Image (cartoon, rainbow over all chains, first blue to last red):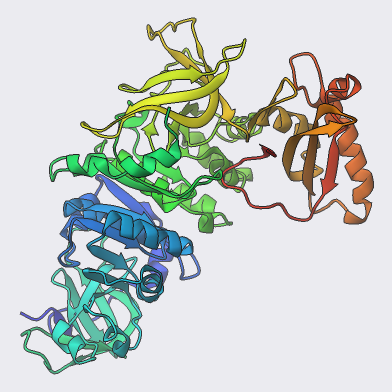
Length: 238
Length: 368
C-alpha cells in the first residue's frame, strides 16, 4: 500500500502544521506522552524549537542495516546523539566525532576498525578524504544530497535517508536507481507523505512524544511513476 | 605507574566484554589530548553513580564536546525511567536560552562548570525565576572554582551543588558526594583504588588511580595528571577514604620555588576586578637571576569592553600592584611578600585583546 497520498484522497483537506507552530507553541502544549526521552533542540531555522524523541520511538526508526562498530559523524550535536542512541538500540557501539576534528576522527575510525559510517552529505566526502579508505557501509542522512554522480566515485553506494531533525525519516533513496545515478525516494514505512502543490507534507505514524501530523516540511517534491522494481511509491525532490 | 600514552595499547581491550545484553553499559570515548597529550580512544564500562535526582525529570546537560554529551546522556537515559535529557551546545548560548530552559522546565543541571556558568549568565532579570526550580546542580570534568561557585550559588539558590571527580578515560572516579564532604572532597567510586605518588610534607602529590575498564580489564596505577591528597580523618557517613583534588599537575596546580600556585587563588584575587578584567591567563616559570633561581609569573589580561584600551599601560600597572597584594600564595603570604623575600620576581601583567583558547578553564600553566 502506498505511503504517498495524493492531496484530497486519504487525508482530509485543511490543517497542516507549519514550522511556525513548532516554533511558537511551547513544548508542554505539544507533548503527547511522557517517558524516557531526549529533548532535541532544532536549530538552523532562525528561532530554535524543541522536539522530544523517546528511546522507544528512536529504536523503531528504519535507517537500515548497520554493523557493530559505527562512527557517527554529524554536523548537528542532537542528530549525532539521536543516531548514537539508535545505534545502541541496534546493539552497536557508536563512536561519535565532531566535524572540526576530521583528521582525528579518521585516526579513531581506523583504530576502531569501523564497519559503518553514519554521517550527513557534506561531511561524508570530507571525512572520506581524510580516511583514505573504503567504508564497508555508510548511511547518509539529511535533506540535501549532492550530485548523484559523486556517489558513483565510491566503491560502495551509501544508504541515503531523507530526514529532517524535527520529523525523523521521511524517505529512503532507491538503491537500484542510485546505481543509475538517479535520486528518487521511497516514503519511509513509518511516514505518510503527501504532495500538495509540490510541497511535501509529512505525518509520522510512530508514537512520538511530540507528534508530527501533516507537517509542512518546507521541502518541495512530486510523486513520479514507478521507475524501479521495488514496487513502492516514488517521489523526487524538486 | 602508567600514563596516558600507555593507555593507547589497552584502549580497546574492553570491547571483548561487550555483549548485546550489556552494550548500554559501555561507551567508546575519543579524548582529544586537551592538556598536551595525544588523542586517545578508549572503551569502558560505565560505573554506576547513585545520583540523587532519580525523582527529577528534566535534566539539562552542558558539556563542550559531543563525546561528553553522549556519555552523560546515555548515563542518565539508560539509568533512570521517566528521565528527559536535553544537551545544550554553545550555539544555544544566546537570548533564546531562557525560553528553552523555561519550556523544558529544567529541574537538574549536569555539566562542566565553565559551560554551565556561561549559560547561567545569560539568564537574567525575571527569567531567573526559571532557575529556582533547579534542585540539583552536579559538576563533572573540571574543578569548581571559587568564582564559578559564587555565580552558581547566586543563580541556582535552591540547588544542591555537588561535584563528581571523573575523567574521560576512566569515567566516574568518585561517588556522588555524601552530605558530610566539602566541595573538592570525594569518596572513591566502587572498584576504584586511589593512592598518592611522591607526597610532600602535607601529603600532597600526584593522584594515582587503579580502575576497571570492564569486567576483565583492570588498569593499575594510572597517573591521571591531577594533584591531590588523601585525608585520614574518616567520614561521618562511615566511609574511610576521603580524597581531595587540588588541580591539574603543572596547569592549575603548580609547584614553584617551594610554593604551590593554585588556579583558585588567582581567581579569588581577581574577583574584586570583575568590572575591569574579563578574563586572564597566567604563566609561571622558574628563572635564574644573578645565579639565583626564583619564580616569575606573567598574566595576560583581557579588559572588559567598556575599559578604554588607550589607557591599558596604566591599567596593567594598577592590576600588577593590586593583584600582588591580594594573591595569597601561602596561607600567610601574598605574592608581594614573596617578592620582597626574593623568592619571586615582581608580577608582570600584559593587556591583550584576545587570549589563546584553552580547553575547559585552564587559567594558569607552568612553563617547563
